[in-house]
Image (cartoon, rainbow, N blue to C red; front, side, top):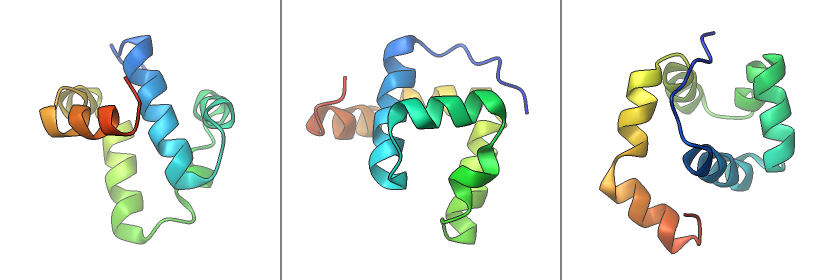
Length: 83
């Protein structure tokens, strides 16, 4: 997997926070799993469609960056107190 994302720390932390709520793991645990390549553990409890979408985003930096620029996502993150 290519981890050469041009994502600001704020956006990365927001994504980790949002993912931690959905996956039941702390942001630090998620960061560690991503850095060590343990992506399979992150998606194993997701339904196959969602797991595929997550893996597709993780493997496509441009798609992830586009998602992070989405106004609806930013509004949703803001409503959760994530900046």
